[in-house]
Image (cartoon, rainbow, N blue to C red; front, top):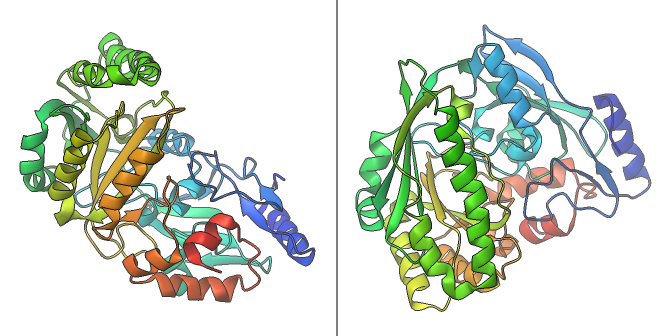
Length: 413
C-alpha cells in the first residue's frame, strides 16, 4: 500500500498488527539483501515525499521518508544548502539509505545517518514517535540506522550547511603506493577513496576537498566521455565480454585500469560526490578497523592472484570516522570500507566467500544492504552495542510486527 499521510500509515500498521500480519517498508529496492521483504503488508512511501521544513537558524531540513536523495540534493542546492557528506549513488529514498547505513567517504564527516538530528517513525503499536537527542534519546541513538526493525520511519531531520564547492582530483596510482601511503592520503584529504583493478597493480584515486572556487565543472564533452562512455557504456561491453569469456578478464582489466585519465574539476557537493552507475552488479562490502586497511587489501590482492578467480569489477575503498550509532558499521571505531563487486549474472559465491573469510578474520562488519552471510551470533561479537539495539527492539516491537527472515538472521528472534 502507498499511504498518503503519516496518520494513514499509522492506521495501516495498527490494522495489520491486529490481523497478525507483518509490515515492512520498501524504498527503491537498492539493497542486495531481503531487508524489506515481507509476506504481509508492504508499505511503499511514494506519496510521503518532499521537504516539510527548512530551519535556517538551526541549519536543519526535515524531509519526508520517501523522498529520493537525488530530489533532496537538488532541492537543497536551490535553497543554497547541502548535506556535508553523501554516498556516490543518490537513487535511494532518504529512509532506505539511512536505515541501512549508506555512506560515502570522509576523514571527518560520517555517513548520511550520522547527519540526522531528529526522526519520526510509526511504532508497532501504531503510535507516531518523535526522537532526537532531547526527545526519546535512547530510541534516537539506535533508530538512525534501524534496519526497519524498530518502526516505519516517516520523516528525517538532517543537519545542513550553506552550499560549498568541492574540488575533485582524480588520478591513477599504483596499488603499492596507495596502500603504503594510505594513512597519509586519508589524513591529507577531506574525502579520499580509490578503486583497485584486480589482476593489475593499478588503481584510480579520488580526492575531494573544499574549494574557494570558482566552480569549474567537467566540460560537457569530456565529462560525457569519462562518466558515460568510459565508466558506463564501454565498461558495460567489457563486463559482458568478460562474463562470456572469463579468460579474457585479466587483459580487459589491464586496459580498463588505464582508460580513465587524470582530471580535476570543481562543483557543488552532490555533483562531485555522486556519479551515474548504469552497469548492473552484485556487491559485498565490509567495514574494518581502519588500521587493517593495507594488510587486508594486500591479502585480498594475493588471494585473487593465487586463485582461479576472474574478477571484472574494481574493488572500492573508502573511509569513515567513528560515530555513535548502535548498528553503524563505523560505530565506535574509525573504519575502512572494502567493497567487492561482480557483473550481474556472473557467479559470485566463490569470490564473495573468499573475501568474506578475509574480512571476518579482522572483525569486519558487513554493510546491512549488501550481500553477506553473517548472523546474530557473529554480529553480536563485532558490535559492542548490539544488545542495546535488540533490547530496544524487544520494547518497541515485542510481537515482531516488523520482522522478516533477514532480521531474524541478523538480529535473532
